[in-house]
Image (cartoon, rainbow, N blue to C red; front, side):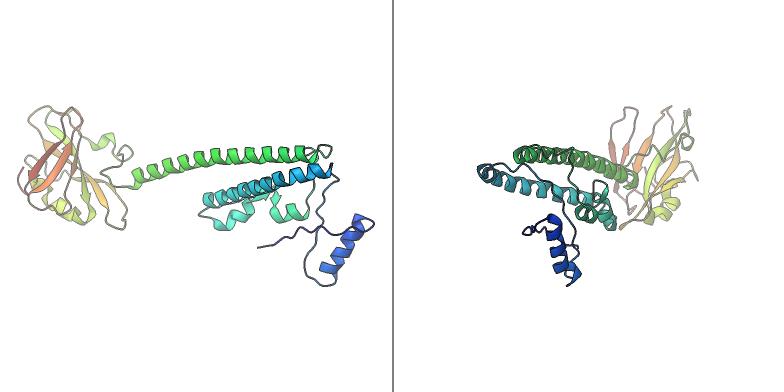
Length: 278
């Protein structure tokens, strides 16, 4: 990383002579550094008492500005966490990279009029940096909220079929509608047990329509396992129209607890089922 020294040298007859002497000592003859002018206009210095009184305030302002600059840089690194190599090219000052800004520094007369006293100029700087700090806090909060919402959405779309929304997965055509004697059930099956489900779903309960199971969606494999969402049809003796979300146990062992949830005012029910029995 490039290191910069801000040097104030004893004056010759003119500023240009001082610059040429310093440049010859550090760059031209010894190749110790690359020197650039840092142009500061003649400011209204005021009296010694004014300078002494301002020195403490400038020290506090210097620490505050440095802290805000570091927070901006850290925030940029956090936002570009997946592209760390692009942090430097996005850290700009007045639209240029930091090295160019420092080596070609020009005093902004419009923002910081040199006819103003040093105290007024320092207050202008403090006000501007405070506004940047407040904007940073606001944007950080908005970014974190958006990031949190996105992560929640990703979890819902990529998480377990038992907890995520099925609105984008299940279609109207997947259901038997307007039937007095058939109802469509949605079942989440662990991928490892899919073959067991195909072999045994017809005997897990009474009146299951044979060969009615259909795979609707497969969750990609994760560190544990993935799930299948399947449908099946059941014959009912009453004209119920139910959407049922059933959970098949990972082991499909006898006496395993199963859960169903219906949307037509039927409460959550739990029952123990045995393979081949309702």
